[in-house]
Image (tube, rainbow, N blue to C red):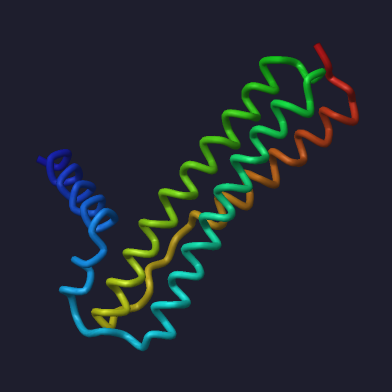
Length: 136
């Protein structure tokens, strides 16, 4: 029952992602400046996702001497983080737009903190590995 409700909720969210006109059916139109700010935030998250994907490809291409398993792990982590960032962007945009239309508080998220900590740890680990020269 709980799993079914969870899947239904995910399905409803994805339908909103693919049909943003449905968001307009809720509440009243907020000040356009807020909607445009929400869109700029969405685009910033997409740029972050693209940067993570680019970083993944950079690790793979520019650190060929790094141990292959470690290089592959770092590459995959960055690529997955980029994909999650893009998915999070559209989900957050819809949630914020709905909240503004309903006159509710904007949704909170731990994602920025988790992403920042994850990128920081990965960057520190890469610096250590490159400085120590852990190669094949």
